[in-house]
Each structure stands twice: as C-alpha cells, then as structure tokens.
Image 1 (tube, rainbow over the protein chains, first blue to last red):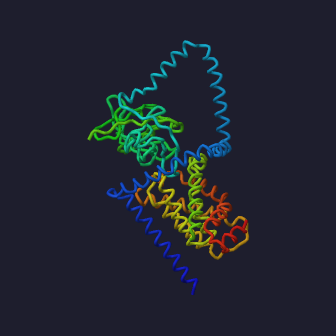
Image 2: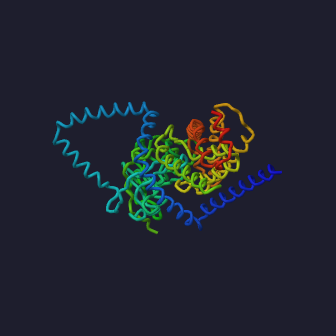
Image 3: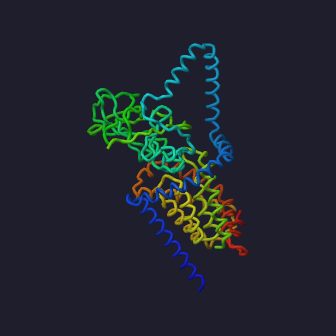
Length: 278
Length: 175
C-alpha cells in the first residue's frame, strides 16, 4: 500500500509545483502585477550581484582558460592581429605630431556627438548574455546612480540597447539584437523612416517598413529618428545596411542591417539619462 | 527534509548559480553557453526519483529566473517537469552501465531546452524560437552530459536523507 500512496504524493507535489509556477508566470506577465515580480527580481539581483562579482574575480581565470581552449583558433588569429597592430604602432611612434593630432581627435570622440548635452552615466559590463534566449548585458550601475527603466544605452560607436530592469546597484540592458527590440530609425535625405528589428543574438537585424524603390545604399547608416513618443533621442547611430532587395510584388523592401556598435566589445557603456517627451 | 538537507540544497543551488553566472557565461560556443542550472533537476531525478527531481527543478529554476531577464517562473516550470520526467522514466532502471547518467542528461537537456523555447513562445516570447536552437541544444546537452556523473553525486549528497541508502548510491555506482 505504501507504493501507491507515495506515487500519489509525488503526483500531488508535481501538480502543486506546476500550479505555483504557472501562477508566478501569470503574475509576471500581467501588466498590473508586474511591479511585484520586478521588485522581487530587483532585490534578488541586489543580493546576488556582490556574490557574483566576488566569485568572478576568483573564477574568471577558469572561464577564460576554457574559453581560450574552445576558441583556440580565434585566439591565435587575435594574436596575429595584435602583432600586426604592434608593427603599425611602432611605425606610428615615429610620427609624433601625427599621433598627437590623432589623440586630440580621440578626445573629441569621447564626447560622442550624438549625445549632445544629455547627461550620461558610465557603467561597466558585469555579465553578457546571461540567457541563451535573450540578448542582454548586466551593468554595474542601478537606480542609486540614476539608471532607470527605459533609458537608452550607447557605446562602442552607436546605440547598444535599452535598460529593461534596474535594481539598486545593477541593471539589465536589452541589446538591439534581441528578438524583442524595435528601434525607430531614419536614413537618407530627405529622411526615410523605418524600424530596425532584432532577430536574436548573432543574427543580422532587419529594417522594416521601407517602401520599394526607396533610395538606399550598402553601408548607409540609420539613426534613431526621435519621433514624438519614441523611446530614443534623435541622431544616435543604430545600424548600417549590409544588403537590400525588393521581392516581386512585395509591399516593402527586404533590408538587412548590422549594429553600428561592436556588441562583442562592451566593457564600458554609457547610459543616456534621457526620458521621452509624452 | 532535514534542516541540514535544506542547507545543503540551498548551498548546492547557490554554488551552481554562481558558477553558471561566471564561468558558465564565459564559455560561448556558436553563440550559446552551457546551462548548469538545468543539470540540477536532472541529477536529482536520477539520484533520488521523480519527487525530488521536481522539487529541485522548481527551486533551481526559480533561483535562475530571479536573475535572468526572461519570464519569472518559466525555468521553474520547465525544471520541475524535467526533474519529474527524468526521475519517473528512470525510476526502475538500475543498469550498471557507466554512460547511463550522461545519456539521460543529454536527452533530458535537449528536451528541456526545446520545451523552454516552446513554452516561452506560447507565453508571448516568440523570439525564443528565433535563436539558434541547434547550437543551444548542442552546447547545453553536451556540457550537461559531461558533468552529469559529478552532478548526480553532488545532488545525491545534498538531498539524501542522512543514514539512509538512496538511489544516489546506485546511480553513483553506474560510473
């Protein structure tokens, strides 16, 4: 008799766990109660982040070892690239005035022109791609430093994404390559409007709603359009065109674009403290 | 479960969560990284059966959900289903073959990743089906298969009632 009773208990446990999980998902998905789950996640991140950061310092070398072993070919290639760069730099070292001029240009670039006078918060990336199903990064600034939900994040040459979760001292940024990301852009003169859709990590993005015969060229840069009600200020470089075609009978062009920002090199990013005008 | 068992379980979940969010994220192959949290319910199901597998899956999944940008509760749901499924389907198997745990982990991980993607899409996260599922399934399943023998031992130690023989001993003897 003990065996059927145990089976019943096991089944009951499973049903209870499924019901609790579904309830939590419902609460998280519902717009009215989402604040509750966001709050819980925020607290969990506040507790977990210091632990992760501490352990990161200890465990990172192990991860780097495995990453280096797995990507041995890429490491060798990078080594070759670095050696080539060293050679170039040696040559440039003899051209001091030229280098000084370049330095001045780099310093000017530090204040990225597209940010204008909007204040920014510099943040360091703590983790990249914490889920296989979402393109996100974790940064080391949160609500305490003025990083709140919805703020645009730039760096490495263009728009990176948007803050989708903020705890006390950390925040999650959804990258523009994420499947849920949509950015309103403009390009060309006169300005044409489009929407750049993320298609998932490592996949090229699509520019949607471009009418057939719209003048467009390979390499053309698309900027945030800053339309009223939009989620980004105008003029941030978002992506450049890699290919385009118009299929017969299609109501819009098929345009593939790549991010302007190098999303593989996001050690430091800037959170733009810009709120959309209602 | 005794207080010592609860403490051990919390410790194991926390350690694996930290390893996953540090070393685990550094290992990227084909755009995908391992999912060690998924290994916990599989190991619990193998070591102690469907009930412990389901409970471990719920706890580990919920812990992962709390720090992931994906819907809260989704990993917990997939975890408890996978833990239960593994425990139920292997409950009467006591084969002394060394690759048994790894084979189960390989199949269960692949199934869990696909279940996660499909459930996510059903919940409105259609982009879950846009990711390179072949790479994610391959990486997650391979790493979990490699680590399964160790995970079964560790989880068996955490969940096993003190002074009582469990399936962990049997499972451990498989390799």
